[in-house]
Length: 133
Length: 83
Image 1 (cartoon, chains in turn purple, green):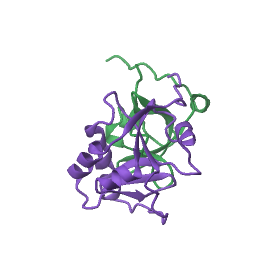
Image 2 (cartoon, chains in turn red, orange; image 1 turned 45 degrees about the vertical axis):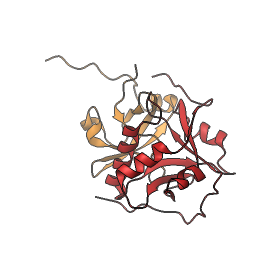
Image 3 (cartoon, each protein chain N blue to C red; image 1 turned 90 degrees about the vertical axis):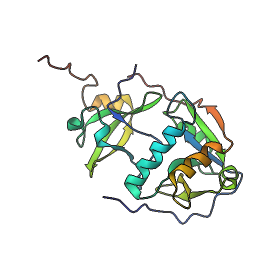
């Protein structure tokens, strides 16, 4: 059953704000990973969205690295301006600082193509928690 | 080599701040029940996790430390029984 996704009434994040997403595999920000993420979101909430974390004064980069991204060795760093310049939107979904990157036409291919075409930097996470298995 | 019980994207959180994955992608879906301790994620980004609920084909779980996971039971899965 599809659920209704809670959207926060937050003001739009400023253009210079950082948008971070943990890297799942070895290939960097992989189009297949983004496609799978967006498809799972659509199964859950009936729209294609890619989960990201938006930094702000309460959720600094360091705090995100040590919490939401702590299991990720690397993450992709976008800016709000970079994503919106490509025509993508950021929806404030779930609990702060979670957002979904979406294509307003809800087109999966467009979402993934535009997101991978957006300038980003891959960062190593200095706060990664490499627990033993 | 990390043995992943439940493939998951740990970037995704639901409205309650829980991670979510497809039950069908679990290695042994029948063992994914509320309270179960497992390894969720991907080989490069995984966590010990506790299943909160299983609903409509989705697994809702939260991440825990190895210490927390150990407190809840053995972290070593039993060997498969031979036929």
